[in-house]
Image 1 (cartoon, rainbow, N blue to C red):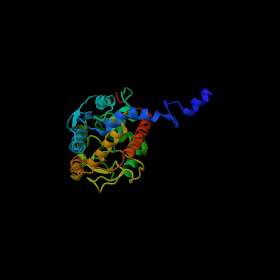
Image 2 (image 1 turned 90 degrees about the horizontal axis):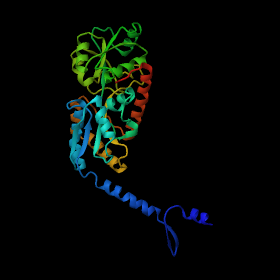
Image 3 (image 1 turned 30 degrees about the horizontal axis):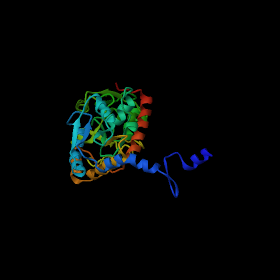
Image 4 (image 1 turned 180 degrees about the vertical axis):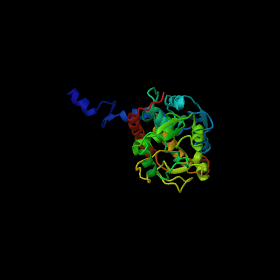
Length: 340
């Protein structure tokens, strides 16, 4: 009899009235939720930090500083950019992942920190899909497949045919082992089934000098960096790496439309928010980011970097991140690339 009554009444606390038993579980649940609801309604009540896991001055740092003023205006609290460089972005990213999930410490994320490090480094202290949720994509930078003008190729198809006839003979420069410019080349080789010889340099400037001087045959580089040399005829662009053409080089086709269907590599940015942050706070940050990147002054600042705003949603960005992690996981298995 007691079991039947308990089952009928449920497991929560009850209070007997003349009308019968009243389940007080929802009441106590609201008491527990009340502080969180009040917190969300009062957010933000102090300055917000955007952690850039690199030293000042790079594109990632400049992107954070481009959106900070607009976020400050919309959120009503100072949004401060804080640089925590080291270990290729791992140190700052791990610190944000372990920070209090209250919406006051955010990560300016990019492919290097959210894809390259987790996939190609076995000793990583954070996981991008476990430790963060994200806003929409903030900015996107295209890169170009470039060759020295002495190369007798003028299209992606011609390059593939030329390389297949000379496996391993073509030298491909990059900014270093595991850099974006290296991985673009690895993806191209995997999809085109060709083999280049990778020549890693210490940074993008050294790699640019190498291809401009003819020391190497080809490279991948951001259009903001190589665009002037392309327009001056010192380099030849065969294609850009994004699914859509670059506004900086609108006459250059994409690798995808050149016949290597599905090729897609871009340098993007997003805000990473510690995963346990209240949903209402996450949504407030997402709405603020969307509003800021729609502002003409923000788009103008990005254009100076060679970056574009290609609208998407937080859900679309997260799906893209999942796809990138899976794709590069396959590339690692094929190539054995590892970053220490």
